[in-house]
Image (cartoon, rainbow, N blue to C red; front, side):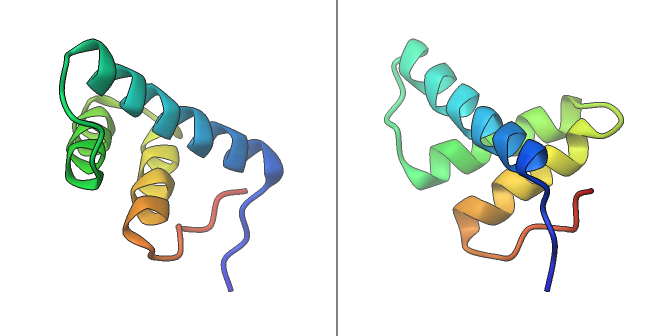
Length: 70
């Protein structure tokens, strides 16, 4: 079973929230596929530990267990 700290969970929720906000501000529909597209784009642009956060957010949206984040 993977372990996600409460801080990492907060960061995952913030990443999802930023993706949704970005979609709304650009006039796109807030749909699962659009959220995933935005998260994947952000993951590609991320550095260091943020890649894990975006991977965790993608896992949350797709229903897969996020990676271990300590």
